[in-house]
Image (cartoon, rainbow, N blue to C red; front, side, top):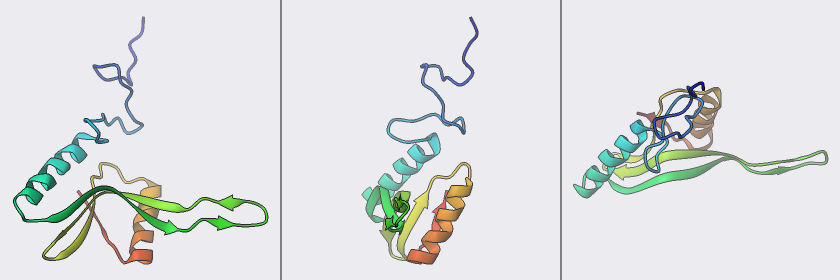
Length: 116
């Protein structure tokens, strides 16, 4: 019987970038970043740490031929420190969709996404 190459040792499927989920996080990189940010928040170096924050980039549009769903960006982490508000993305691979959404975040909200 052939062994499935797209399965980890627990039999769970891998995503298309071969990243394994770690607890509730999409990757080990994201899980490690979350742990580091929680430690910084506990130490008082950052505040208002939030995970999976949704930003609307384009609103829902209705038309005669079809309705278009809104376009949103889901940030991995958002927090504040003495320098301002930060939006972080634990990025292992930049997809075309991500690059477009990153540019829309800058244009629509004036927010530059920090990739870790």
